[in-house]
Image 1: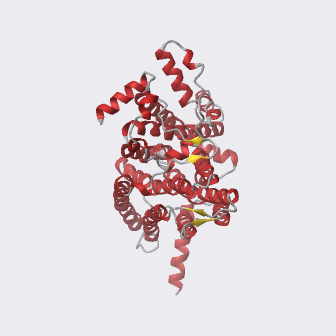
Image 2: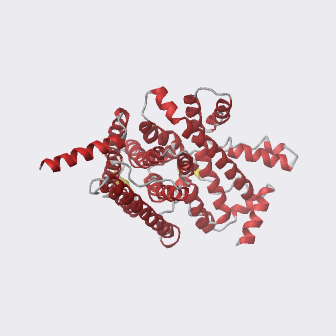
Image 3: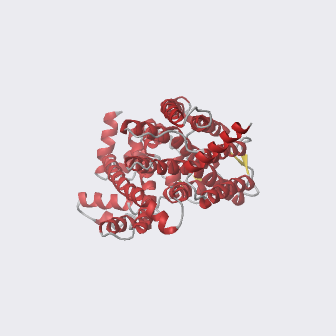
Amino acid sequence: MGSRNHEVSMLMENGGGGNIVKGLSKEMRHGRTAHNMSSSSLHKKSDLTLVSKVHSIPLRNVLVNLQEVVLGTKLSILFPAIPLAVVAQCYGFGRPWIFALSLLGLTPLAERVSFLTEQLAYYTGPTVGGLLNATCGNATELIIAIFALSNNKIHVVKYSLLGSIISNLLLVLGTSLFCGGIANIRKEQKYDRRQADINLLMLFVALLCHLLPVLFHYVGASAADTAESSLQLSRAASIVMVIAYCAYLVFQLWTHRQLFEAQDEVDEEGGNESEEAVIGFWSAFAWLVGMTVIIALLSEYVVQTIEDASDSWGLSVSFLSIILLPIVGNAAEHAGAIIFAFKNKLDISLGVSLGSATQISMFVVPLCVIVAWIMGIKMDLNFNILETGSFAVAITITAFTLQDGTSHYMKGLVLLLCYIVIGACFFVQRTPSNVANITLKSATEAVFRAQ
């Protein structure tokens, strides 16, 4: 298989890959995940008429790559935000402008990373492609978290990851169910409950691991002992969560792959979706590395300027991290989920929202705790009582919403309203959560002493 993949990639680099990829086995082309399908919904078919007239093969390959990777997305209009952010940083423009431009630049990059992992999957097969998607699917959140950790901004790490989870469960899923229900109001929308059940089980495991460190602060003998115990428990729980996520990947990619595969269906309007790689293996790999570097650069800008943007705009850091960052940073993925809900393909929409929430809660969050441990930074799974309570409500109401395997617009509306209430909560919040925790704990102790 390795020599076959090498031959395919070489032929693709020389412009003959289309016919070769058509001849690949169905198993090698199949197995596209919901994230890949969501990315492909924003792919713009390229017109290579002018490029094909270029006589120089190396130049033609470069132009094809530029057209497919940079111009081959409906979000290409946002790419100019990337150089503008770099110029703003270099010439000392207002830091809120750097934050806004960096955030806009991350939007098409996140979608293109998903596209490039799908291109690589055509050559590596569905299993390795699935692992690539699992690793790179939330690369933006992970990179932002690592840069925030390196700057010792643990609160930004916690807020941004929590916001991604809540936005996937309530905003993305709610919008998908609402729009899908309105667009198919006279049809009964159904989906496969088995995939949703597995993801929700994983999310409840994550909730348990977040809830126990919070409760430690109300049963500990002293603040110092409680903080140390919470930290040790969080590190142990993070290792367990990573092991559970590895088992989940085995379940998803090997033993029960059929539950998670997004079936390639014929679109009534656009015909059959493309099952061909449009760029070569090494080209896709080089583009993926380059875009990861750019994501890292913009993520550093975001982390460095988020507090300045908070002061300038009069918005709390918690609101920017929990609400604004996930909405803008994952806009492409969210749009793809909503598009498939319009087409009555709820399994794909659920795969995007629940799959992303599971990946962040069971892999990205514990990985950040472990990385912080290695860096000598004390990060635990205590997200404070308000944030953890919002997390618990989001998981619980999502589980109730998806319990019967059918959907209508009212379910989506309820999820959206819950998200609006949580967003309003963090919008009006001005007291730091750690201060709130200290106040609540002191009040509780005072009540017990009075009794």
